[in-house]
Image 1 (tube, one colour):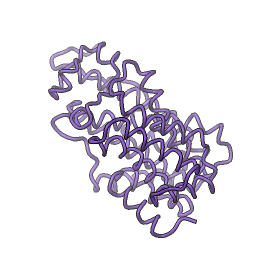
Image 2 (cartoon, one colour):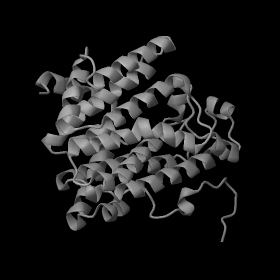
Image 3 (cartoon, one colour):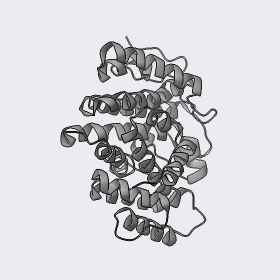
Image 4 (tube, one colour):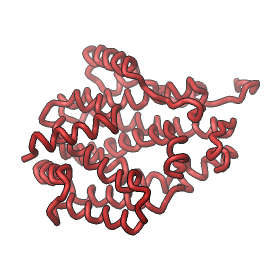
Length: 317
């Protein structure tokens, strides 16, 4: 049984490192909220092996992740209370071992890989680093038809991570020497690695960002369409999480895609306002797709407002 101490530590990790996710987690019923704290803390512990221990040589990082894999799968006794709690949650909720394996494999790839040449490459990475999170949450929630819901959970996990990538371009290159904009997208818009290293928001960079925002928004639409398969008392929390993450898109567009000069951040007041607006629409319809269309920053379909046009460029008829 997960102890109060383990739960407090897990919750503290989420509060400190995942504010957006924490806002939404608080709306879940307790039977789901508490294991979600543990799940998120496990993800962060694994992520810190790569991004928080950059002074360690790669071999030692790999060794730590493999140890963490064995602990998470219950093959060895855990040294860390977060991992002990995760073992309990995983066994109790039936989290698939395959999803744990996929997640750890993605963390291992972070040690050596810092560029993704195509979106297919990036999507394969996100299947472990983000979509596995959504699939594990299905187990935590205990949904009735996991196979029907799974493609939507995968899409929403990818959408959340794509938003993070687009929001954190500067942090990723400066702190971790990573570029998540696919090479094919950069090449199509004439964006060089030097442009990103110099944090130079060229017209090409802005257009590349617009393209990737649209790609993420397609994932949001698919992901939100599967919220109806979740337990009724979990649907609003997941819907609100989607609205909150997607709100970064509004800010990015308001900045004219210059995510270098100013960090796109959803403030606390805006988050509360979005909660109230989402709640109001939710009470009216209880349909996740309808509410998301009414409240979120994601347009209903690709259109001119999502496309960057350099100043002075005439708009097509």
